[in-house]
Every structure is written in structure tokens, then in C-alpha cells.
Image (tube, rainbow, N blue to C red; front, top):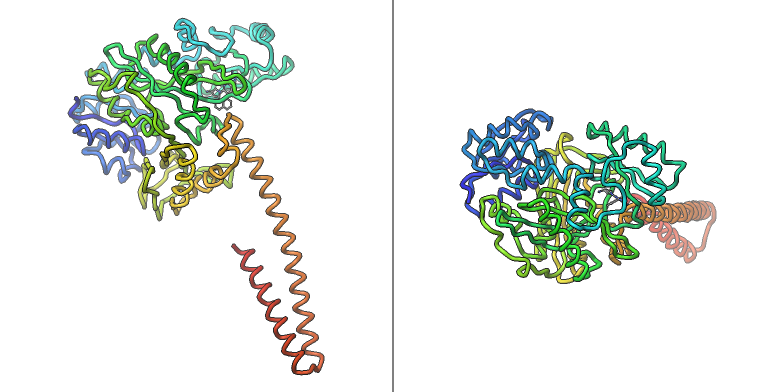
Length: 514
Ligand code: MV4
């Protein structure tokens, strides 16, 4: 096993990796940018090296500086986490060429999966189903048009160098194809420096289901089951679960076997994720792409399989065999993860940077919080706004949802705005609770929420009318008390009536303020 490892990342994932190193007796080197000097991952590591100013391009993405930091501190290996340089074949090569171990697959495997068309070719060669469409980049609009007619609309245009939905266009008819082709090309060129596109038949109401795989250097490739990631907002995952609410062991076995075939085809080592689209109506599934890294949502797999994926990454990177076989893997209970972002759900999820002035994280039975922040942490606009992940485990999906509701109610963050209030609504949503998820969930949820707001406004304006009526009645009462000489008994009655009206008006104003 390694004696010392450099972690080429920040935030919650750097903290997660440091925790695994502690357990394995590995010394840790953190890297940090200037504003991150007091951050949690720096405080937790044994050593830390400044790699540059705030901008990622000048700090967390500087390959030469990071490799030099690893050499200077006598680290033996580099863990890239996710994001930043995690899927850069150039980085993996630079690490290997300086005599260090890259915690991940080979640069070759990363390159094959980095290009979506070459990944599709690898899947076809391995005998894994892909979404019907082209496996070579389209050479012209005419070719795109002929292929679209062949497969039939609706079709998807996607960037060959893309992934994660960038440069992607849904085309529902031939009249839209030319402009979609041109804008997708322009977007792909701007985002990836490569304008090539490919085309797929569009899958309707797809579910995004991915399989966790693991390979070692002794030829073993296994899978750890699926994660349901259909709840996404602008191609960003929001909630992930294991197992999928479909919870079909036979489907899991078949998808797992296809994912392992992909892994074997590229001699995959370490943790990887094979993404599939699953057609809601037929439960047919198709290979979409492969992520050659540890993923954000790995905790739900860890909770249900009771295995530590980061430990396993270190084992296989140091040349040991996987600590378990396919037959050893089993799945117990249900886990759900929410990504807590420093974003304002009431303002179109706009980033909400600032200082965390108060923080109370949930705990207790079945709760796991992977956090990158503490009280007084600065949430900067320079980096991903995800500050923590809340993952829960229950024996059933129902129990997991109850725990999640409880944990979300316990969670307190002040100083910045977070997506916590949004999750508190999602976990009570009937469609979410039903588990019948697809990638259109968030759009439908937002519509339901907007409609609920309209009816809440209606109640408010009705009550405002009642309050106006009460005030009027109160004034009338006062006027008549002041002007008429009443018998003592009826005066007493009127004073009581007035007190009642006063109470009603005050209750209403309090309600309006809350
Ligand atoms: C699709 C699709 C339907 N048909 N491909 C979006 C991100 C990228 N990884 C692939 N994506 C999709 N590809 C075909 N042929 C629908 C999506 C899609 C989607 C997929 C997963 C999760 C959320 C999504 C939201 C919109 C569209």
C-alpha cells in the first residue's frame, strides 16, 4: 500500500479521500488555491501545497504544478477525485511519466471513453446495446438528414467530444434539422474545440440508470449494481438512489453484465461508471457513455453494498486484487442522496456565494453527510457550488424517505442560500414518493410547485378581503359605541364583540407576516 498520496482536488471529495487514507494509514498531501488556505480539506490533510490563485485554470487544473508538488512532497500516488483533472488522459500520463501512480484507469481507457463515438464503437465491439444511430461522426448535413430519415424522428444530435448534455439537440422533425445541426456544431466547437456530431434515435421518457463497475490489474471486473439518477436539472444530478425504485434484480444482473463487458473491452482498472438510458415503457436499455472516475454519488452504492469504494481504489492502484468477487456483492436496503448546493432555488438556482455563519448538520441513525465546509467557510464563486451531500439509508425506500425528511428538517445552514428548502418539498412530492421517475421529473415538479403557489396566492387574497371586512366592522362598532348612549348591559356586549374583532385582525396580520 502507498505511504503517501497527493489529492488533486478540493471540497467534500478531497475530505472523503483523506478519510479513506487515514483509515488505511496513508499520509496525505492536499493542494489548495490562495482563497482555499483555511478550507477543511487543507486542515484535514497532513501536508498542503499552494498551487496558485483562485482561478481553477491557474491552480487545480495546472498539471505541471500539481505533479511537481507530488514529487516535492515524496508522494507515491495521485488521487484526482472527480471534476478538475479526473478525466484528463494528459494528467494521467504526466503522473505516470514522473514515476507516480495515477489512482484511476489507464490514459488509453480514458481516451476511448472520452470520445463518445469511440465509446459507442467499443460498446458495439463488446456486443453491448447502444441507442440506434451513428458510430462515426457525421460528415455533412446531408448525411445527418439521410440518417435521421433512416432512424425516424425524433432524433438526438450530440457532440462527439461531448458528454453530460452539452452540445445536445432534440430534433422532432426534418424542418428543424438544419438549424439544430448548425447550432449544435457551433456549440460543440465552442465547448470542446471539436465540432463533430453524431446522431441517435431519441429515447422517450428515458430513465438514467448507471452501473458502478470496478476492475483490478489481475483481470477481474465486477459490478456493484445500479444507481438511479433520473432526477436531474439542466443535466446536473440532483437526487440519486440505490437501488433504482424499479428494484428488479434481473434487470440489475443484465445491466451489470453489459457494464462489465464494457470494462473488459478497455482493460478497465479502478472505479468506473457505465451510464445507460432505460426506456420507461419497455425497460429496454442502451449504453450511453462511461465515466472513468469515482462519481459524486458513490455513497449510495457504498451504503447499500457496505463496501468502501475509495479503499478499493487504493487497493487496486497499488497492484492488489479486488477484496471481493462478484458473488460476494449483495445489496441491502435503500439509499438516497441529495446534493446540497449553495444556490437559490427561489431565484432559478442562481449561485449564492458567501460565508457560512451557522451550520448544524443532521446525524443519527442511517445518516451520512459528506461535507466540504464548516461554520465560517467561504463559499466562493470560483468553484462548483456543491457544499455537501446528504445520504440516508433505510431498510426500504419508504424508510429512507422518512429519514431523509427528518434529516432535511434538522439541517441548518445560514449566511448563504442553499437548495435545502427545495429538497424538503421534493421528498414530500407524490410523484417522487411513488418512485415512478424519469428525466422529466424536475420540469413537472416545478410546474406543480408554480401551480401550488398560484393557489396559495388565491387563499391569501381571499383572506385579505375578509380582513378588510373585519376592519370595517370594527370601525363601525367603535363609531356606534362613541355616538349612542347605550344601556350598561348592551355596552358590555359590544365591548366583547369589539375585543373579538380586534383579536381576529391581529391574528390575520400575524399570519400575513409569517
Ligand atoms: C438521450 C436522451 C434521449 N434519447 N439520448 C442527456 C445527458 C447525456 N448524458 C445524455 N442525455 C440524454 N440523451 C437519446 N438518444 C435523453 C437525454 C436526457 C437526459 C438523460 C439523462 C438524464 C437527464 C436527461 C435530461 C434530458 C435529456
